[in-house]
Image 1 (cartoon, one colour):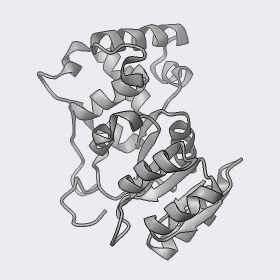
Image 2 (cartoon, rainbow, N blue to C red):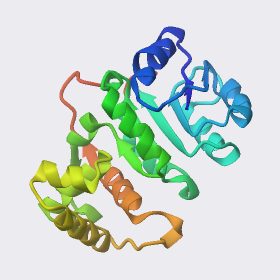
Image 3 (cartoon, rainbow, N blue to C red):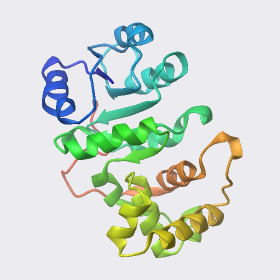
Image 4 (cartoon, rainbow, N blue to C red):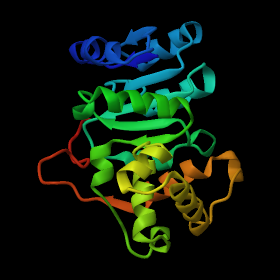
Length: 229
């Protein structure tokens, strides 16, 4: 995997304090600019890119992720930010909508979540910071209205990158029941397997992000008003 972060101390923290603790993960490169990372990715061949969204002057992390996915071996991108703007995942190009995770910088101390974010992105899924998912509230008169409260609970687990087994454990359900609920979610949201080449599980999470609002606790994290992420 490759790290891109313009603040040297934080970049070192990510590599030494976080990524080195994730079993089976090797950092093949660590860079301060998107341009340097993109130039080196061709020969370093990382499978996952962990990048800050705001990289100062030049290309930002989202643009870097898009270019890296299209031009290099990168299969998954983990975006880091201080801003609560996971809806950026629903604005990505249709051919690249899977394979992204969005984490708050304050969450990188949770090594387990960082590891799940990397693995989920590499599998072509979509994962959102658990804190942010917990603050999502479905908006009225949207496709989410078609879902039952239980279906929304399962969809919330999907957005966290939880496996069907983990969702079943958290909600005290059987795995088979979770599979059935997910199938009903996909049907109720009018999504179909293989449409546009996007996994319907990914599409379901993106619909959720697009039609849910963040109701953050006061002062917990910026909702986008800050000038820098």
